[in-house]
Length: 417
Image (tube, rainbow, N blue to C red):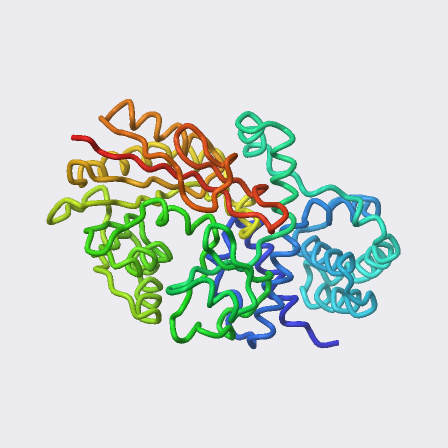
């Protein structure tokens, strides 16, 4: 039997995440050589298996006497996910056996086990829907429980399981674009389409009339509210969604990021959308601007724990030690940015993190170090319970009836002197 290339690629990606602790972005070359439909299917299978891994393991546990080797385990994971989400059992089991047989001495002796275990799983799939959402890893779950409580964390885990819809930001009139695309116009101005929509096939993509951007990620630039002609810095700008928002508002935008590779995508988006910005590849801790700015948007490097519903690989590759190193970097970037503002200028600080150490506490500490004034959060469309004393706090369980949002913290402060 021939090997299913999409399944084989998905297995390799999952091993990379769970064994080698590499993000899917770091493994982008793992899909090279696949046709577009195969790439899409491999991505879908990878994300679905990672997102449901706790449930997958619960389905397999009664049918395994001991933990299988990693190369075999990932085939069983993938096949179990497929069986429990409606794929035809005969084809799934045969494809899994073929993958195991092709694995050489490490797995070829387990074809009989694979066949037997997966046939038992196929007879047990009614149990799937009763299984709870997978729990976050202990290092993160404990921090979130301390910050938000058990019920909120369980709601976030449920939101992670559902994944994320496709959100867009319109370059021009969002009402007209929503009607054209058949999208939901969210109260905050973003457009929402169902997950799985093919981005490049949507009307207006090639003409640059919109760009992909989660509804929460679109809020920092809207909080900054740039005015035409203002000198504005987008700090840590790549991949560029916020830069596009600032430029579309008519601001004189400088976009700075340390990664030239990530800035290449920003250049592409600017060109596609017919927008302009001065793009600078530099380390913000060393770079100095030629003149002060009216406004700065700092979307700081962070744990990205607010994006797990979109990136289910993150809980497997991050840990507490790696996150702690980010806290002093965020503080240093805030201090640098405040020093580049004109008197009376404003800074929007944002992180796509669920941890108060990367959000609320950073702003509280900055206000203790500097003469700052908090701006009120009066943005159209925001929910009252998103407003906290230091800004806006969004979590994946916000807007559950609409499909949720990424987790974000956003604050706006004025430098008075």
